Image (tube, rainbow, N blue to C red; front, side):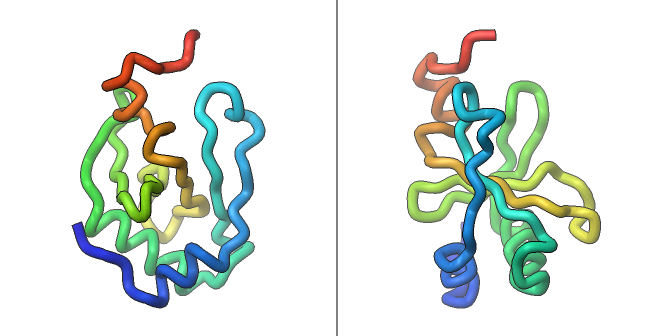
Length: 107
């Protein structure tokens, strides 16, 4: 895994992330929407996640994740040109961490 450029570190730090209220009790996370931020930096970060991340799962769905400063970042896998959202959560709220710690939400 590759570390982030200073420019992408600043993008993450200066972006206003939105808490996903719908998933507050089951999968707490935040997201950013492409048309609300600098598009070039958004696309750079999506490419970085896809190229420097690792393949993991969310239940049966394959997802490319990227870890940075105890946060896990991902998109939903649409082609880069069509990607509109970047998600993030604390490492301890990620699917793989919660699966390993027998802490998945009850259905």
